[in-house]
Length: 238
Image (cartoon, rainbow, N blue to C red; front, top):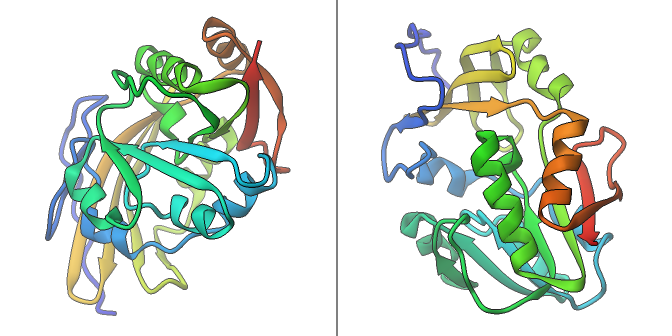
């Protein structure tokens, strides 16, 4: 894969999410063609171990179906929600709904609702609306499954190698990773063959107190960690 020079990051607003490169770019800056290249990284197995066999599963922010597709193969009935029609066009084999998470009203409840990929690490006011949407679509005896970025995980990007070749066949270049508590601002370049995409976004640190408060406000209670690094956990209705 050819070397490319690192460009100086341009100045962006603290919450501005932007992307560039070939193909469609979502409202939050995700390059769709790059996300279509990503394989599953074992997320479905983590979820499967936490929910009943053959559960009805709703994923909020499902993207291209990278997690839902293997969950379906494990015997679950899956539905995905995303606000990007371009992402959902790559999930035509799945049941999907195009909608923002925060305003979603399916008038249906599920055995399990997923919010993964760092979607908890958005602006706190939006995060609370996301968690409320999880509860709104969760059966009273259901399980909510969350994945988020801990402060420790966010800070690792400051120390990470700026160029990293993934076994999946793409290269990641960290153009910028700046910590301004409670936020980490990222600008990442992805390379695959002759294609180059960029994505810049902000992730918010979540304290234990904030997490507990947001769950309680949505009538959810913490139900335990799913992984040793404490980035995956479950919550259940109060």
